[in-house]
Length: 244
Image (spheres, rainbow, N blue to C red):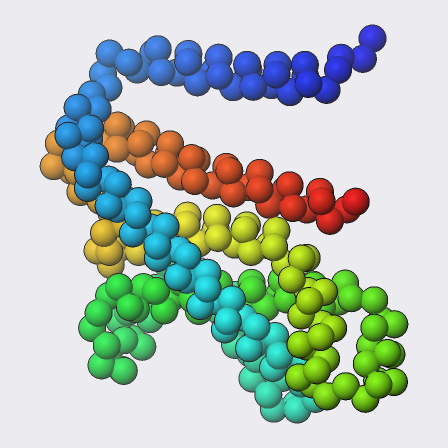
């Protein structure tokens, strides 16, 4: 007898809830969240900075990623190669390394000392090639007959993107954008290494002051899950809608 899907989903949820409850029951005697609760204002401020910085980085990397995408689609070998080299360099560099390169090498060379700006720049540079890949995938999903029609009516580059290409790319890129936002939110934790007061850095400071490290990391875990799980479900919802 086949178990109905809703019951199987419920059983899976019960499994994780039971496991979570068991773990909490084993460590409940040593947990003390009072100091973190008293500093909830700082935690909320850190979470707000994390979300705000992530949204700004998403928007800027979206723009830069689209520019890189256009460069990869040009007929100029120089421009195309420049874009490809940029993608290879950035995608081959871990975010932690890129943050230090941007802050302590590029920032020094350009005379920029503001670590918030430099952290924002690092996130933008890091995510832009992934945005380019999203645009590339959406572009390749367009029916080839559309390009024949554009050639037939002699559309220029602006007309091609304004009336045909971009409208058809918007829907396919939404799930990827949501997933990238989730990735950026988790990536902001790296900025704690340069003392930017996002949620990871703020929680670490509070934990160090109160010596409640387990509680601090537990709160961090819950905060990231509360943000990223809904984003993941939203991305999957958009993906399912595109299949119908």
